[in-house]
Image (cartoon, rainbow, N blue to C red; front, side):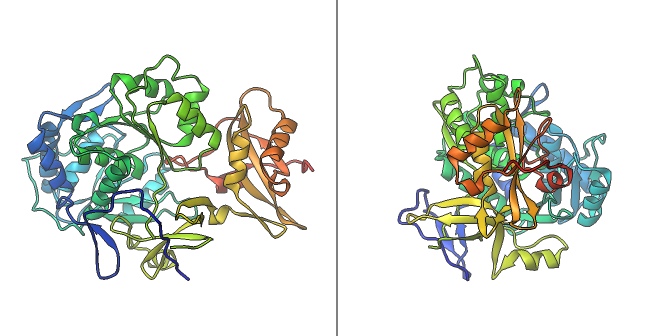
Length: 473
């Protein structure tokens, strides 16, 4: 059964929207396409800074448009036409951005390839997407006579990102111009960004551009607001901290693990962060203790959890489903995966949530990460939060350990600063959560926990690599 989630009062502006015949909400006044959005700022603020690569190029909106037009001309000369796929395998920086916009200006589809993948994984993505041009790390940008294709339809595919592949081979997600623009409009509404924010809206991109956060919510979000995307080719906590005042960053987005590194290594000590207006996080659960530390460190900023909420009716607990103009409709060349992921037009997110009387949504866990211990459901997220509130514990992952009697028991993998005190960790958890949720197994992990480029824990990899000792109780 699908039940809609209702709210007594929507905290976000809902004006300027309408529903289509299927009940999906669309924004009424979006730009016609991503190139149309970019060109609007070229006309209004041609000399405003659009893109910065730390220790590299700095481009105004006019320079970005002109150089992307030459890339489009070069791609056209190599056979790229409307709908042709172009693989982007450049490292994060201005070259990636020019390749992306050049592909869109010629009418092609940008395929964002995870450059941290192993060669067989890269080859799978290139073959699966059917790329016409592959822009590899060492390749120069295409160059030719400037070209801009006719404005595409809003429902035309603009780019394709691939899922992280944590449960199998990655799946291509065709993303339309309207989906990108809807995400951008959602962003400015949620943050309360006004139309005149312009060049004061500056975001620091420390996550990969082949990830939707870096590209969709930051690179394109900044362009939508007429702001500046400042790109870090390589994430280094000290460099992140130094860039905040130097580049006048107002909008900060990254995964909880990076914030933990910034605070744990005292990288922000002595750094002026008063200009940061929004501190956003997502991609992985965040411990309540880390949220409190962020509030203390960024006193002038609003903290925002990046898990978006859909305006949908009252259920107590279950899997969150989503639909909307910014939600995909299918996976590329994967009819079986598409059929499994969609129910009557709704995307199954795989997130188990609960909803309170006001319609607020609380993420309990990923469906596949719920531990069933003797008939009791244990949220790995809740246990991880308790573990990460222990002084000295910098990371935690909780997974089920098979057990002949209980079915599963709770196992924890932690990263600890200094000498670990397992007894103290378990006792602390016992004061935070119910006894049946307290880990029966605990392993101290050397080095950071395995994560994908988006910051998500690779629990399947952990299950294969961890060695459990005797149960603690």
